[in-house]
Length: 491
Ligand SMILES: NC(=O)C1=CN([C@@H]2O[C@H](COP(=O)(O)OP(=O)(O)OC[C@H]3O[C@@H](n4cnc5c(N)ncnc54)[C@H](O)[C@@H]3O)[C@@H](O)[C@H]2O)[C@@H](O)CC1
Ligand SMILES: Nc1ncnc2c1ncn2[C@@H]1O[C@H](COP(=O)(O)OP(=O)(O)O)[C@@H](O)[C@H]1O
Ligand SMILES: [K+]
Image (tube, rainbow, N blue to C red; front, side):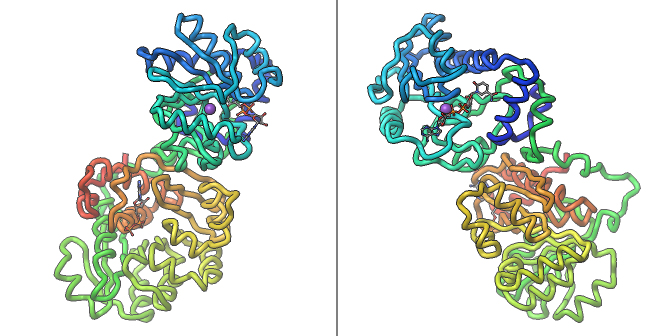
């Protein structure tokens, strides 16, 4: 049944609603807690059979309750187990109080824990209910555990990681393994939470999938399931114009490489034809580097308008190496009513003139995808970037709403968001993608998908996924050039 929830991301608030719906439907919440705790104890025994002692750190809520169940199960199995609690066990309520009463082990205060060689820590201090920075006592324990290099298994989330945002609230454990329940939370995928989780296990504690999916929003992990239905196989009778004609706009003679990378990536990703559009002074240098990609001289808006009479040129990439200024703005506004990937200098050109772009995006009937990294995002959306209360997902959603464009907010945890609020978080990108020109390649792949007629959100999400796969195939020593050679076919 977890297959049905494999790509779903559930926020902590949605998880609370799911818990409540489960209880309302007659499912016993203590049974769920017992399944959760048993799953944690099973993971501990499976992963660390050589542990000399399991140390279970229990917090003041239901995450602590899971910890007491796990401690009882480990002790029942004959393991050496010690329990340390944050706060007084007498103050526990509900299921957590019941789990603690049923636990035969004595409970010591958290601060008394001194790590020993051979310990394995089970972190059940805070999970989805973490509402503010970790309390002082937890800091000291976390520091001692990490100094002692004690392996940590986290229950639901490493304590300190915010399940909604992936941010670290003050400090957090860094787990070797995290066991979460029913579905992943944004904090498992967003940085830095993702690296604090270690290996992530999603365990089915028995809440019906229907109850989960009915209350989960429009947030998914970026896999082919999110866009595969728009990535149709090639029609045997197709021809190159049917596969779309992508135009990529080159900068001046000293900055042509970025646009050529986008153009080559667009062709490799499946556009039927790609034309590199070049100013006169860069024609020679571009011509000397192109083979399958075609070349066309366009000097100004008049030339561009003439070319645009050919309706078969249906998608464009503007920004990589283009130069910041009025020419970029004028060109972009002319291309908005077709399909446009606005990247790099293309976005920066609108730093002080964004209203015009956003208005055109809202009213042109075209498809606009913008691909900012963190710096570009802050330039175009300063008020959203500065809002510390928002997660990266919420920032991308707010930017998409404001700009009427699909936003690809890049990074290790790229988020793709549509103006409707629909969003995916990407999880397949290796860090070797952090290399010059990698963003230009991504822009070209998005452009190819737009040229092939995919809707903007699917075009962007599929491109981010293929870019990540290409990065993995290209390996650690990749360059933007070898990345292009490794773009996989659309699945
Ligand atoms: N989702 C589910 O269906 C299930 C959830 N379970 C567990 O329940 C957990 C959520 O339980 P809770 O909602 O009780 O939340 P937590 O156990 O994560 O913590 C909440 C408690 O800590 C307090 N608190 C929050 N931040 C604090 C801080 N920085 N300093 C001090 N106190 C703080 C809160 O006021 C509350 O009392 C999940 O993470 C999971 O481990 C399981 O029992 C199984 C079922
Ligand atoms: N640490 C990382 N892990 C995975 N992907 C990354 C990482 N850092 C950057 N990337 C990806 O690499 C690409 C870099 O694009 P960008 O920042 O525009 O760089 P450039 O302009 O040099 O091409 C983006 O797709 C981004 O998501
Ligand atoms: K935890």
